[in-house]
Length: 111
Length: 114
View 1: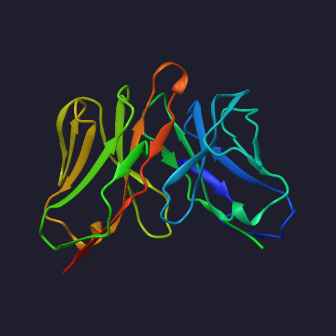
View 2: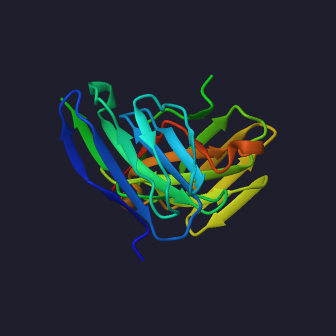
């Protein structure tokens, strides 16, 4: 049982480039989330989804987009990367309102 | 005021001692409370959840919830060096359309020294 799988683990982007962070879960969870974690700042919610075809903004959505075409996949798209998007990104999933299962994270640096 | 605030760290305790981690939250309608442990360079891992007032024990961990005071804590008994990590408090303000969204505190770094 893989749980929540994120790719890539590391990435360096140049300012203005775009990329997609992949997230897949095999637990049949309806709820999926994207968070970013900056040093000493805890986790901030970027986007979330309560099921296939349904997404909504979190606390810090600017500069990001998501889609949820299947229950399993919840990719995060970064358009026009900026240095402020340098962070560690975590995808998570949950069943109803229980605790999250997190992916292993993507460490992104924008230079 | 931050929505979820944890006691400032870092917290250092000797091996075998009790480590006490505290968290306050601002939204009175919060319903679910979680503690996550995060080792350096790793993802958060759920260690405790609590939904009703009182204490909940799981091995060396005890979570305490007081909704009237909007306070949740985590006690770690017989602390071990392997408990050294950042501990994140998370609160589900799930009412209405909040679904399962968690709001996290900034984390408390715990170091257990031999």
